[in-house]
Image (cartoon, rainbow, N blue to C red; front, side):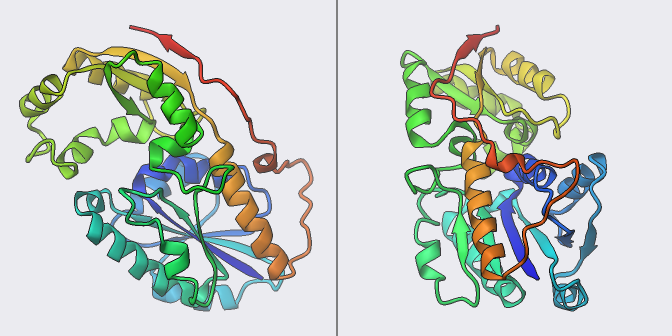
Length: 293
C-alpha cells in the first residue's frame, strides 16, 4: 500500500482535480475535512470522482483497513489568506506537512516558492518519516507560483512577459480571476474585499493595461471567460490570451508518484480502457499570444 498526500493552496484546485482525473492508478481519494475543502469537494462531485471526507485524525485508521496493494491519495487544501503573511504561510505549510507525514508515504506540494518562503522545504523536512516534494520545472527549479506552474516555469514566464512590450499586465488562471477580490485583499492592494473603487485606483496608478487569460485546458471553474471579461471591463483592460502548459504539474506529480509506488513495491496497475495521460505531457516551445479585446 502507498499513501500519498497532496497539500496545496486553494488556488491550485483545478490543477489538483485535473491530476486526479488523469491518474488511473488511484484506488481511493480522501479529502481532509477543513474550512477550505468545500471547493475541491464540489469539483470532485462535478466530475463524478468517488471520494471520502474525514477529519485528519481518522485517516490512519481508514488507511490501515485498505487493500495491501492500494494507492491512496489524501488531499489537504490550504487557505488563500496565508498569502497575506509569507512567514505564516511557511509556518502553516510546515506544520501541516509534519502532521500529515505521520500517516503518509510521501507528500506532494501544490505550491511554488511563494516569495521564497518554501525554497528550502524539501531540505528542511528531509528528516520526516516520508519524502516531501514540490512543483519543479524540467531543470529541477521550484516554480515561482501558481502562474509559473501553468505557463511552463520561469523561462516561459519571462518569455511571455517580454511579449507585453513593457506594458503592465496582470495574469489570470481560472481560480485567480474567481478569487481576485480575496487575493487583492491578502496582497495588500485593498483593505476591504468589496472596495472596487480602491482596486481601480491601485491598478490605474500602477499602469496596468492588459489582463492575460491563460487557457489552462481545464473546465472545473465555471464561467472563466465571462469572469475575465467582467474583470477587464471593470478595470478597463485589454484581454490577451495564451495557451497554458501542463508539463510541470504532470511531470512533477508523476515522477514523485512513480518513485513512491516503486518504493512501496506496489505492482504496476493496468486499468482497462484508461490511459495514464500524466506521462504524455505537452512540451510546447512557444506560447502564442492572441489579443481578444
